[in-house]
Amino acid sequence: MEDRRYSQRPRIPEQYLFSRIVPLTFLLGLTCGLMIWFLGTHAYNFIRSGFSPLAPPSFVWPLDALQFIVEGSFFFLLGAVNNSNSQFLNGPQWKKDRNAFLVSIEPVWRFVSFLFIGSGMYFLIVHPLHLAFTELKGSSTLELVIHIYLSVLYILVGPGILSWYVYVRDRRSAIQEE
Image (cartoon, rainbow, N blue to C red; front, side, top):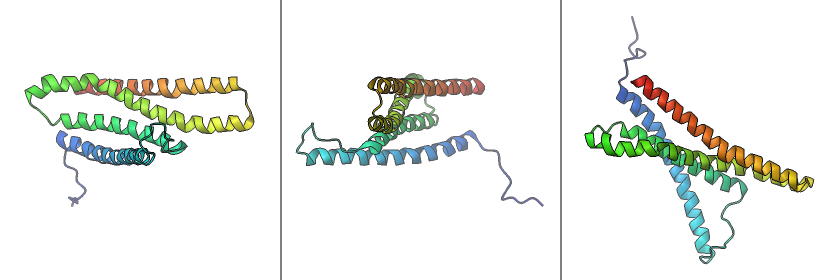
């Protein structure tokens, strides 16, 4: 006799979509909370400094880089949740005008989010390298070459490759659905 608890019913597309939206929305809430915390800390330090724009920064090395990574993750998750939620809307006005706008800005949205994440990763890596070079008294030319290489690698190449990968993956899944 078959145990009914373990038998799987076929899932309908709405169940797949809903099971994708729930974790994405949860992660979006977490990153939104972290962004609000960062923003509140910056506002508190700005007010405490007497509204001086030349006040020292609110965060030091690991947290300022983490702020960039959280902001990039927030932008990426916002686009992913918006894309998933828009699949529930079926009206003709939505499919013609508004969805076309979202589809047209989606590659730009992803590139900007990967740019923020790449910038955060760059700052996480460059700061310890900069400290190591100042302690070892390395040549300034070598330090400049390493900074330029890491800048190109993490800020330009990383987001570009990730955006291209996500774009190609989405195109392949759209072709398979047709």
